[in-house]
Image (tube, rainbow, N blue to C red; front, side, top):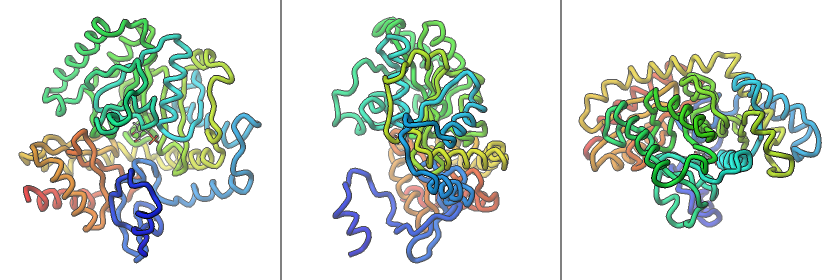
Length: 420
Ligand SMILES: Cc1ncc(COP(=O)(O)O)c(C=O)c1O
């Protein structure tokens, strides 16, 4: 039996299989299959491996911590790896926050919802259409990037309201008009459906990930910060996909110079191991007393050691600034695609890069493009509410020549797979 056949017999089919690669190992920016074929991995575990596969310093940190202890429940005693990582994260976020560690992005979202309810005594939560926040029932209630993620599981957690994200291409509006549209929807929500003093939090991605790498107009997050502060509503920014240096700032909200109340982190945070975190302003953490929340594996020391090693590499090698530079190069390289009538946008911030297609054929074009890329030895991912977007999330330390060549390949394949 092949590995694929054994998989089919032993694993749930609910997770769609995206490629037929029999993965043997990962090496830097590449996946290597059992026959030794190398694939340039521009997905990286969905924006997880910020410094590539099996970075020696990360592997060393994992081995060292594993040799000390693999796991101790976070409430059992004080652990250097965990404290050191929280301190390192706060060095970028700010000293007036504290960190709660979980295992997955969805769990960090759950923690944010719980803290928001506990700290404000309010129930409602507002999120945005096109947003993805995870698949556990609370996080799923906020997720609105595809109806199929939600419908089968309803009823979801009550008290969640959605408004349109200011996504210009999705709304078919220029950026300023898209922003005004969102403002209007938000004001109508407060006037018609839920009074502001019933809203515990607004949860928002600084850049929508699964929704198609959508960068909101620059006035959006500052406005949201202002309007939430005015009503005593907590602003929770979901940085699970955009965070850890990928966008050219350590945290994507830092482009907009706002101070969120809660920051939700995951994916790259664990350096390849399952780890997430929710940082909250310390006066809010003071209103979340001991015993109200917890997790067996949250704050696992091996994951914390891997995450800390990753963060140290990112800082030491200047990978945040590098992400900004390589991102600019990508937009220049992909710019010619804008001239195509089937391309509605080429956009990105740092190494969150996307090409959006338009027209009824867009999702099938994207599907063909993903398949053709794989045949060319390059693994890429779709995004967008109709899977009409290609998103690229290379490791932040990808070699520049490799990145340039990959963008050239993508351009060529867009031509070759169009309208067939
Ligand atoms: C922005 C965002 N939030 C939350 C999640 C959920 O993370 P996880 O799959 O680790 O639960 C994701 C996953 O893609 C995400 O992109």
